[in-house]
Amino acid sequence: MKRQIYIPQLPLAVYREVAAHLRQVPGVSVVLLPQTASEFDYRQSQVGGLEIENGTGTAGAQQQVERILNHYADRFGTWQAIASMP
Image (tube, rainbow, N blue to C red; front, top):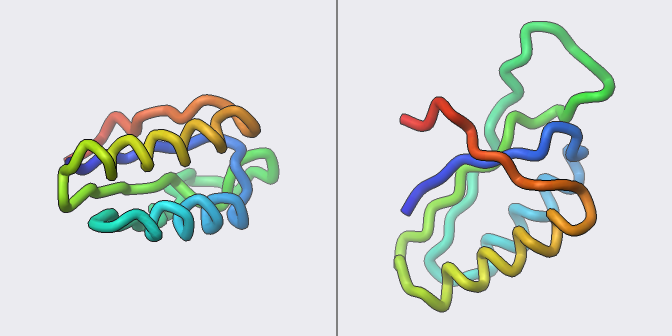
């Protein structure tokens, strides 16, 4: 299962922290997506989002991913899906 998500104003350091936590889940790979905005805006994140893939597809791994994402959502806002998922 692959998905792309973002929080519009999440700082770069927090994206890196989330990615590091997610990579600790067996079978999960994470890529930081580049920012696609045409103009720089200090109020927006320097990252376009996360692409998360659960290669094992196990329910346990998916539950752990959701717990990690919910932890950050509680502190920084709701994760949103990126519409242009290939």
